[in-house]
Length: 77
Image (tube, rainbow, N blue to C red; front, side, top):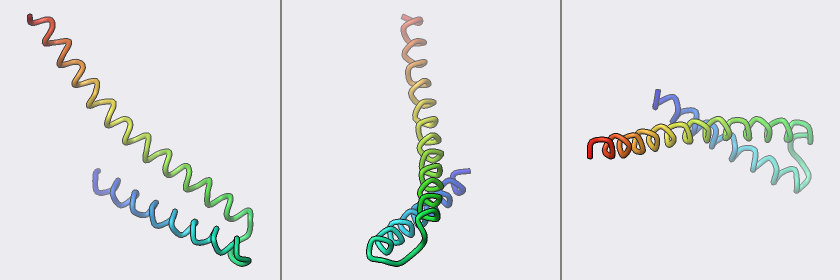
């Protein structure tokens, strides 16, 4: 499962770099059309949102486990 996350992350990074290059090309006069750039930016935004959501879920589970350990420790004393 972690390998898929890493693959997805690096594909997303490469896609984002490509979109940044296309935006720079659009500023200087060529490249994709406006609609294509907007759709690509929306897709990149969705990808980053899903990636951050998974990272926050992992952090939340670790934090709840840690807090649960302290609650159990208080009951033993």
